Length: 206
Ligand SMILES: O=C([C@H](O)CO)[C@H](O)[C@H](O)COP(=O)(O)O
Image (cartoon, rainbow, N blue to C red; front, side):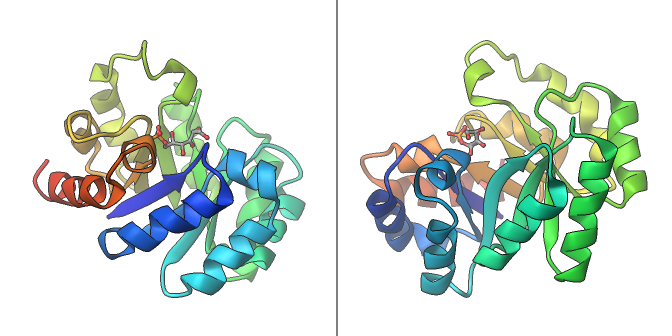
């Protein structure tokens, strides 16, 4: 499955991109920067327009788990992100809110290198994790290490993210992901529809 990440573009561009590509995607992500720019209303408007598509709010919550998770769900998100390095309490509070609302959290593993921490997340009741290479280190990161985490994350629903394009996808596919998060390759393309189609093909036969 593919999740388009709407980041570093304005609201009009977010809606324009989605209107072009929605037949090729399974999830829409409202990116952290877009939420910071427009607030929770952009989540609400996107969900109203695309009610049949799963919507993830990339809140990247790292504290006040109960409050921020509730904010995302009340705005209409089906999923929201919580950072894996947050306090245990933040994560368990977010899970509790998700369970109360029959929705889901995805724990973002940016900066997590400890497999012990990943297995602790499972103990807390986390179902989904995102193996994510942050924007600011995408240039320097060799992707070879990703396969070392395959066993550690195999019991989770796995999202992958971080500069995924039609070539880098092969490195991420070693993790057998359920969802490929694709941002700039689609949103920065002169032909988002064609880029989304290419990604759809690439994740079918990585
Ligand atoms: O979460 C993201 C990043 O931290 C910026 O907020 C992006 O959504 C994610 O990395 C996917 O975008 P691309 O790396 O441009 O594919």
